[in-house]
Length: 440
Image (cartoon, rainbow, N blue to C red):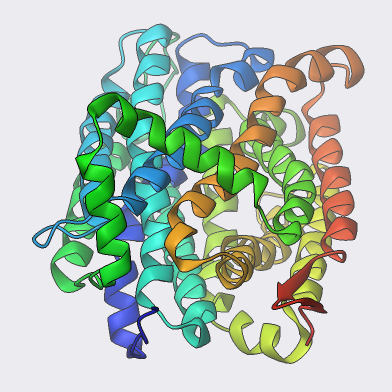
């Protein structure tokens, strides 16, 4: 038996997603501030990919396991997904407070591992939370609202970076130390990480499981401890075996999309040291302006994409947005004005809004309710595996094939987005026994 879920109002969907603001503020700092901190603490550019391996590894391990465990969890007081993203938010808050105080590179790298565990613990249940609460007719609105908060959270993080650099930066950079102007962005993130999650936890009740689901959960609780430990791994293996064909096709898109995104985030600051002749502080601030610009666009267009996907089909909107992102990356290295170089981020922002909403809406339509948590975890595996491949492979590629040139790194990322766009045109949603294009 399935529960007929009531439609939620705009503000109910809004409150449900507020917690994503804090999670994405943290990810915004990871995109724009973590690599500059590594550079401040003495890392070389070719080391950046491998220093970022914490995200892919923790995402690969933590999210699918947490997804499978949360599927088998229910507390009348705390719910199913809430305990996990609350614990993750507390971990993230502590790490963000400590990060700019890092005395050495090894300490910052270690904190990144813990921070990524917390962020991944919060992220996956939140994706499943939206699918749990909403009827299928509101999936697009729910996930595009998440996309809006993705943009807003990263926007605030990056705006804080370049504003604090402008207000409190300047002076000579001291090798081996993190400049004081970066501290404030992390302290704000520490507060938002826990405060926004608490807002959603207190404002949004979870839907209780059906009698059949509760029976399965109670059977799981009755198992011996070691058997319960094995269950998430068994669930993941079964889910992969039964995975819809659509998700296999999406994994091919994600391979090129997320590899390219990781290259962009790691090398945009080094790029501006070359193309604009900036020092590391100035380059980090310019990179933050780039991220702020594309996330303003994301926040504006996220909900606009909902009627566009209904009219033209998610597949076409998604593929076109990836192509626009490629065009942006091809243009950035050749624009030598700090204002004009922001213009390509309009295309990047549209692409980011699509990437953060459309695939999740698609997947929610093709996976069963009772396994949504584990499948959202597997979807994240499709994100972190390409990132892991990038962290292991791109350092040698950058040094030996691209001549250690960050301009070439950006062009390489643009080419991968073109490939992702082509592959996205193969995506079809399977309904019942017939496969329909997403245009239908």
